Image (cartoon, rainbow, N blue to C red; front, top):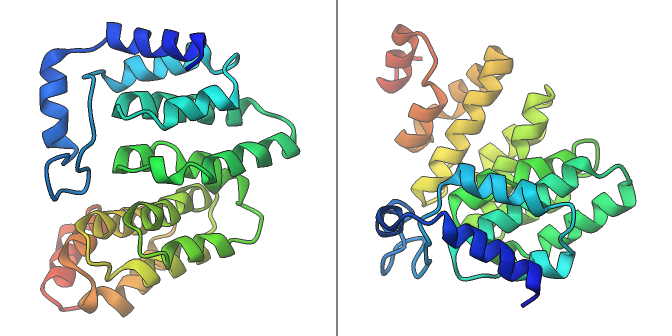
Length: 238
């Protein structure tokens, strides 16, 4: 482990709160048989992780980032991933951006909880592939791996914010009946984001699919609908 990596981990430990360290395993479902089984926590708040990532992202090397992202402690992994996001956002060279994207993709095994996915994938993968072929997102969606499937879905947030919905809708259709509640929430969230930009696009998708969608996905998707229309969807009257 490099001196800089040790320095970052020590900075995180200095911000650790014992009560948070006790609470986070429950919040992130790190118990036996749960989706975050075995994860370890220091008890550091996300704003502190962001501040530390911003302090070090310019000078840290990719091998050092790799050390952070592979660390057994959740907050160390997230801090490394946030530093990668900040590096990517400041980078001007398309070739270097591609190198950072490939680095992220090579570390997907460690992007292994919903917050690690949701704070990074759309800002790296979504941004980079906005105007490029998106075949690999469909491969991720077909992977059978929860976190890679969530990465595929949440990466579309960047495209949605740019007003492009076709791939997001296709991924939502592919993943809407996923067995895990975390994917139901991801699909519903992205559909709601589409509706924020184009109500009719979301409405037409839901009109076609709502009867076969999991209830959680539907509730997330229609959260901002007028109450009468929400009830029509929930009671099957659309």
